Image (cartoon, rainbow, N blue to C red; front, side):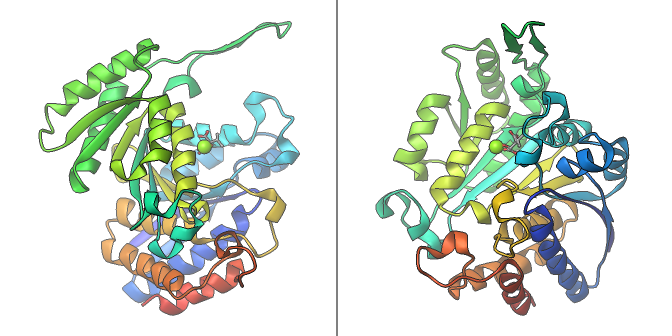
Length: 355
Ligand code: IPM
Ligand code: MG
């Protein structure tokens, strides 16, 4: 198959890790007889430096014309003092909404070989963790009307959801739960927020179409607590944009391997945007120490979800798992005093095992 992949390396460690994911994609293409063409686009701080804006029209338009987007990370202290509308993060939000990617899949997966890296007690996370967070990505308080007083004495962000927006994300979550362990937890704040009462009503209504999936509802504060108390109770969690932002950071931390976690942002069709869960880590940029695995696994999700290349995705995942099980680590997961490999060298090990 021939596919065009839009590549946004972004800022900080973005270029370090994306270049390694491309090496893995290239070898995969070679083994399985595909042709991937890369279209390099600018967004985030990189675009601010080059064009004065975080998301040039050309980036969005070219991304739309491609088969999928692979993104490193955006942002850094250099652009931290910029006005809200000009910050690098604005590029991410613009891509998500401009490409209508309303479903964000964030798997929090703990590799058994890394269970000592979790900050939770061993018995709480024993035998690994496998939670999928389905975060609504183009609505809610992130995209509601923003206002502030001329004299800066007040500011407001509107949280708004339509039933249609909740229904489509709920369906994606039920579909995902159906393919996994058949359990869905919907997280809201229905004791306080009107949007959450709407959310709960719609999710409950949609659940009638999925009698095989067991649904429960949790308030977000309780969900945050349950995630550290007993994370193994969760299979799929579905929640609105900001709650999902917060809970996915928490879930990724308890796996102890934020440098290993990928994400996929999807809409109605096959097109998607794939990026690691972690940020741009400017303090370690360009030093060949960042963990490229989250980006490599994001690339494998791209093959699976956007290109229907299940065997290819599995081959990459197996190679990564084999490298981890063989004891190779980057510094973030090595543990104090243990030897670790650089960004390029751990990718070499993955490439050796990719067959
Ligand atoms: C994430 C990030 C973004 C978000 C930021 C960088 C805008 O935290 O992808 O989780 O809040 O969605
Ligand atoms: Mg976040």
